[in-house]
Image (cartoon, rainbow, N blue to C red; front, side):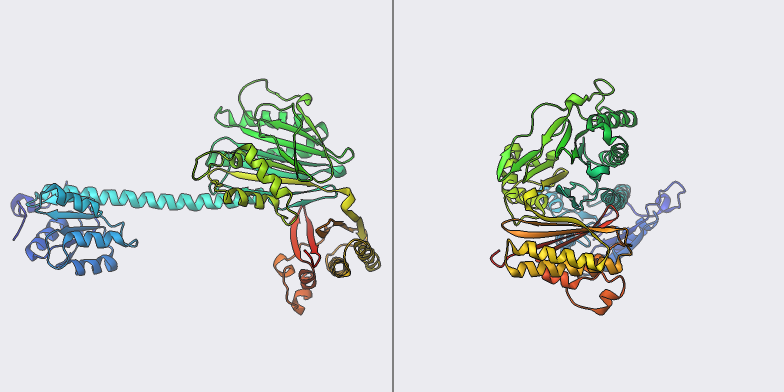
Length: 544
């Protein structure tokens, strides 16, 4: 039985130059051949390629193999009806994007609802008008093409954002920073491929160092570009103006951002601190950013009150809004740990209650992390802890920077070892003697073995001459012993250096595959930072 109200004779069957070319491949599913032939002839006139299936199973096979742009399915068919066919198509992810139009003589609303519930995008009632069918098919094909174009655009944008995020991440190194007075560790977690946080640790002449952490307003591509520009500008200003202090640097940064952005919607909160080694203190400037959280000997310490100003780049107030009086002086003490963070941590919401983490809970978490002697990568441990406490870390950009001041009483030895075998041997013997005064012989022997192997490899294979030296620092506390080396020689092959199997080839090129050190030390960290190789070895006693 046929269910159409017009045929293709006379005027309807003539070639019409104004007839639209719908294009696309359409699968017509109907158990009656006359209906299939009619629809094929009709749709072919509009530039469609038409496939035919007499039943549901055959249609399902064609959907898999031919991937038509549209399925036009009769509802009433034996074995597998149109509803079942539609449901089978929509259940499979590989073909679920193919639209289905139901052709039905059933006009009851429940039947129509069933089709839509199964995923059909439209329906045509029998007997149908040829013009209506063509219009509905044309709309379905146009919608599918639009969706495919949108999907392609999303894939392209996702790829470009991923690439942009990779480039941006290369600008913001989370490599730890080690020096005589402190170490800095950073963890950055972007809510998207690109993020609006900016940070850096910049070594300066005479042992000074500048750290900063910024958070650009908003989310998306624009804040990410601003954060990259802020980083480049801040680096330039810090390196050239550090002697004039953080307030002066922030004024210049504010002027440049205001000029470049000229948009009140975009600005950045910023915390900057300049370390002065001769006074063992940080000179800080807070531009609308959360104050640091500080812990010393397991107890929270209040950050000095006063100082601060508006965010950099905010279009209000005087052109240079910061005064030297706005700076805050932070006097350092042994075992002081300082957490700089962006508000993605404190504003993380609890999955169950919806409440923000808040500064008090964040301080409590940091006290626990700071007091844990086994937590080496403290920013990582802190973010993991916040997540374990059921807060939605990652819904906003999150950066945690932990500055851990070195306790001078824990420094057993700190020196520059000359690039000379005798100097290396003498220094390593001294290390062993010093360690033995505090811990068992096993740890002392391992410290000497690692120190000798490491330093001798630098002497023999780094390319440094006798005018250079290896910086070393040996520290000890009640839980562990740590040995840090830094040299300006050729870059390590990190993967080879991390090997734990002895292979002659590891030593053939550069001699820097230090398998012995990886076995003798309980933990090894290797980095390349500021054109230097930095390695930290951790040793624990048997009881630890």
